[in-house]
Amino acid sequence: MARAGVTPERIESVAAQVVDQDGWDTLTLSAVASQLGVSVPSLYKHVDGMAGVRRRVTVRAVVELADRLTTAAMGRAGSDVLWPLAQAYRLFAVEHPGQYAATIVAPAVDDTEHAAASGRVLMPVLAMIAGYGVPADRSIDAARFIRSSLHGFVSLQLAGGFGLPDDVDASFEAAIAAIDRALRTWE
Figure 1 (tube, one colour):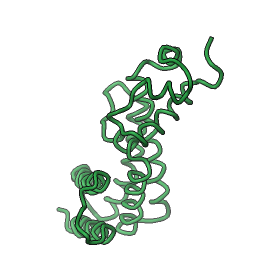
Figure 2 (cartoon, helix red, strand yellow):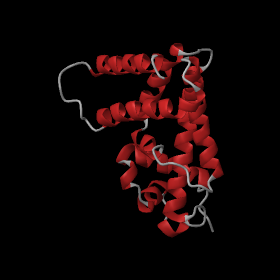
Figure 3 (cartoon, helix red, strand yellow):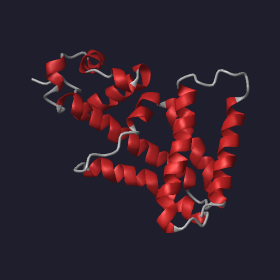
Figure 4 (tube, helix red, strand yellow):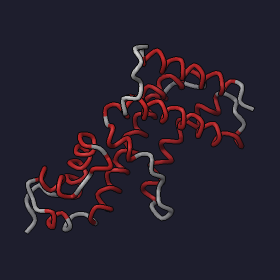
């Protein structure tokens, strides 16, 4: 008999908390089971093992990131979207470092739910890029540039890679200004 309160959604929620606390790479079924007060084998009644738990946390994280980016972009266009979008991205990574790490994985070819969530992340970014006048056939290049820039910054920040005494927020603002300049001159 399944323990009351243990559902796929509850396992997902607890796993998300575990990865934010301990890190994406350290997620184990035993850590999730321990938090739920159940044995590891009882999790298999609700999820498809570790792969199932990781996938659920990944989709959850991508949906949350998509929601935040969409909210940040609402009612704005072009360059007016960049700063709030970048801030939303960075804040998600800082608040949910383990879940953020889960968002890096591209969807499997047959995972339509993950692909749809990833598409939702891309929508406000592509709309912003179009507002800069970047040609449609170059928009994916621009989106990859933005993602790489933001990911690099937040990954270094999360890893404690900014040890110099200079203000990290000021450096982030300078990085966003550089992205803005690059998008304004994209060919």
